[in-house]
Image 1 (cartoon, helix red, strand yellow):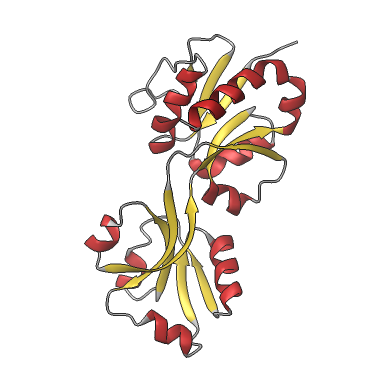
Image 2: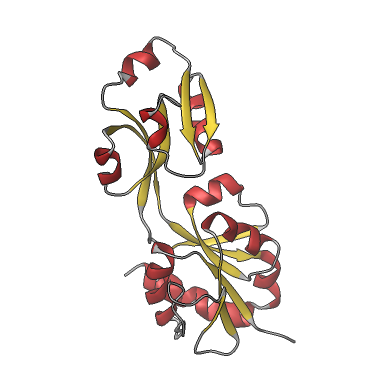
Length: 215
């Protein structure tokens, strides 16, 4: 029975911060995704490989079994809905927060108080919808895929909902954070069938990840 394992990761911060967890499980990725053009990277274990996919696609690859497990931000999982995924561990990596931000001169509090209908630009439509609905604020959501900060500056939106880590991008574009929606970190997600069929192979890796993430 084939016990090869495929781990889905996205480039950048999640990849970098997952490496020490892999090392704790005795695994080393033998090529760097920043310099390699390959999308399937080998590890020091011939039975474990890493596929490099877009962050928002990680849950989909795992859900449909193209990857046995993966690492995805809570932000991505909330938008995906987490269907068909087992989410055993908060890895405490790639930490940031989901926030509402507006142009420095915009009086967000009084707009909300007066029941104005706000235009909000975001990639995280599901999360934004739930947040504003819970507050009873009427919003028109505008889905964007990049550079949210531009939207209020050119009059596309009154506010944005986006991930913030240091806040320096907001400051550089004269935006201010006006509301904290939730803290975000990355989770390990596992394909439910793989968990049953490849448990022997997966379990030690999951345990090593869990132990390392608590350090």
